[in-house]
Amino acid sequence: MVSTTTFLFAALAAVVSAAPGCAPPVTFTLPKIGGGTELVAPAANLVLKKIAIGHGIQNYTCGTTTDDAKATGAVAVLYDATGLYPGTKKTGLKQREWDSAPSTLLWHSPLPLNKLVGSKYGADLANPFPDPAADLSCPGLPAAKYMGHHFFDSQGTPVFELPAVGLAAVVGKVDGITAPASADKGIIDTGAVAWLQLDDNLSGKSKGVTSVYRVVTAGGAAQPCSVAGAGVQSVPYATYYWFFG
Ligand SMILES: *[C@@H]1O[C@H](CO)[C@@H](O)[C@H](O)[C@H]1NC(C)=O
Ligand SMILES: *[C@@H]1O[C@H](CO)[C@@H](O)[C@H](O)[C@H]1NC(C)=O
Image (cartoon, rainbow, N blue to C red; front, side, top):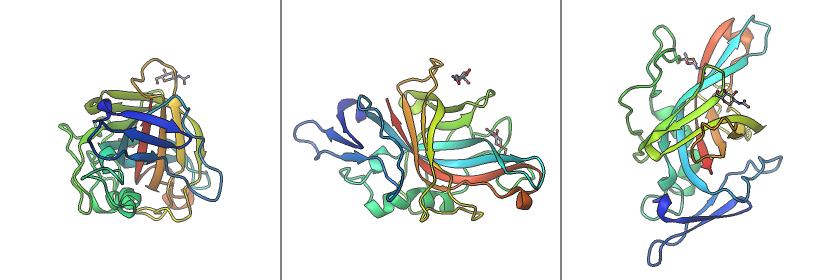
């Protein structure tokens, strides 16, 4: 669908010009926190490629119980949410449903990862992703197609592999802002992880993606080391990832 339409960007808004006689144009607007510092808008020459809704875990380590938990990465499965964007003919969600979809996914669907035996939310270290991958089927949400997955490679670089839509992103963090106070604090009530801008790290491994925005996060923040204890912790989260290229 996206390949046959034209995306135009003006500040934070993108206008899709559908072919004549088709549905009215959909305006994609990157969410804002409101009332504070926002992420910088995608570069004017970029177009929206896809919006994914992702579900997985954020990992942290604690050396001792007095440390600050250190983020060590994440693994998540991504589904194509582009067609669920409000205003999309037939398949678009109501704005309220769209805004709460990451929270709905977090609470109403089991983690789509191979479990680490003996751990509550951990995923199998060597083999976290089920194969074959399943499409999204979550009570309270429409079905959505499997798009790919997100993980950190052996060098600690965030990677998005999106074979189902022919995209890939190997990125680095350029900006992050605290999630809004109203964000879903998640399954273990630790809070929502920051909203982020992640840009292509110029390793030549990205395909069709220059910037990735993580917005409308639900859960994922670390437990304090005084509570979690020393060692690794995995915290469930869900979010949108907006891919621009
Ligand atoms: C996160 O921890 C899980 C185990 O819970 C593991 O499967 C995964 O590889 C870890 N990922 C990163 C990036 O640390
Ligand atoms: C980009 O990611 C690749 C893959 O992990 C890594 O080899 C490279 O060092 C990274 N480049 C930068 C500038 O971080």
